[in-house]
Image (cartoon, helix red, strand yellow):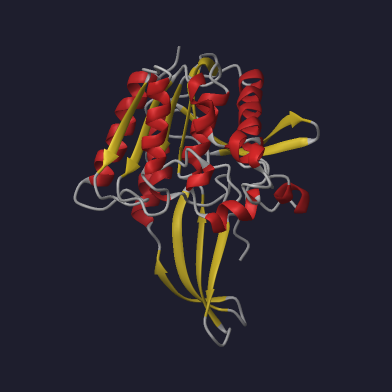
Length: 323
């Protein structure tokens, strides 16, 4: 098609026709019906033009894609959204979105939905928003890249993330080293906890949503695929589980969980709370959403409440704007 971005195809049974969805990081998806024998677009089914128009009208620059050299021959993919009215002579808070598990990636030239729109709103308010893919994530970087995370989930990725953040601080004078935040959902929530607990002097504020605090509490099909059996990799399970480093918390931490989460069970939050309380940690807050599942969207007003809560917490604990 000659279009730079991300293309998804849903093929018809006979293979002649396909539903083609195309997007970039800065443009909402367009859906078309395509004749695969000729490449001809038969019909445009949806353009989401109103969403793209809103993005274009907000005054933000084009998202920057880059690679961060963290040494040892390793370069990490990253994207960066700079604030509205960006002035490179001043410093801004850096708010990092992370996933970091082998299931997926965050750094791709595709539209990110509601999180993407939230990140843009934060950039309008004065944050540099970025994301970094550690080694092992589901990026097209080769066999060694993917295999490197085996028995290292939570350990290698949190180290890579910290190295990537430090690289941004060292190479971009407009990043304020005293205002570094991190957030993520599910595996990204776990990575946020590992970031806050394992690198407490780097991150000042974190928001962890639906996080796994102890790998032994998670789905065996997933966890054992990437970590092996607990009996054969006890050290990896221990060192990759953020609950075992909770005593190191220094910064501000907001933890959010649905009590009806049938993927990352609610016990992950309660057991972590017990650990933080036992260590007399007082710089954390938590929000439980009654009867909500892993996506935390059920019942009226939930999504608006969730993103409003996170925005207010971030602005209070990690003030936006240039200095």
